[in-house]
Amino acid sequence: MTTLIVATHNQHKTEEIAAMLGEHFAPITDLTQQPNRDDHPAPEETGKTFEANALIKALDASARFPDATILADDSGLEVDALAGAPGVYSARYAGENASDADNRKKLLTVLDGNTQRSARFRCVLILVKNGKVLTTCDGTCEGRIATAESGDGGFGYDPLFIPEGYDESFGILPAETKNQLSHRGRALAKLKTALSIDN
Ligand code: ITT
Image 1: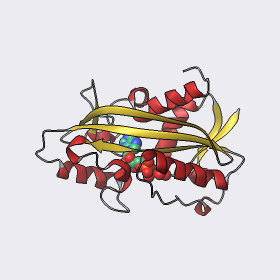
Image 2: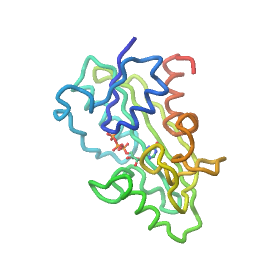
Image 3: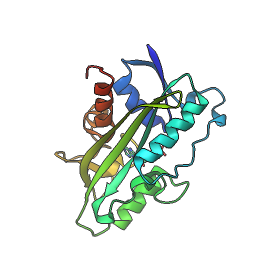
Image 4: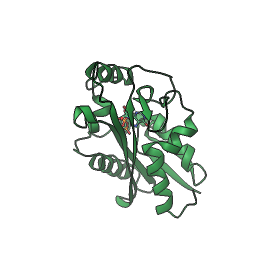
């Protein structure tokens, strides 16, 4: 089976990707699991779009591991009441070294008293080998921002995000449900189709 390196330092992303692609690629690892991991810092995400940042991560990792198949994921949350923010800045919404908890706290504060809570997660995945883009896929998950956190499943904004058609956040819903509905799950489903892998 083909091996896959996910061009990420976020192990939650790797887990979700492995849950959906694990039958088709093995092993699936990420940049935190490579020998000399300190030699592989995250590249600066200077792009203005998810696709631009996914490409930066994909090409950076491909230059480090030219023989490997690489999958990069850039993703984030767009809140309508905030004109699409935090968007590509989702990971650093509350500052350069902000934790997920800091970012959620800031979002709740900024939206305090606002009844317009509609939002969506977006994900762009780029598969590359030896510096060549093989496929680009995207996925979106519509939903709303809760007025308080719930659950401790998932990562990032999950305890605040209630997907459309549900009453509970991704922090509470089972991982399998998130993977079926999520922006990442939808992008991965398209990736499988592009690679002619049965869903
Ligand atoms: P890498 O760049 O190393 O992949 P990262 O976490 O910094 O890791 P991004 O730059 O793509 O990744 O930022 C994505 C942020 O968007 C992430 O830190 C979360 O805050 C949020 N996010 C993305 N997908 C999410 C998900 O499935 N659930 C909750 N929050 C998510």
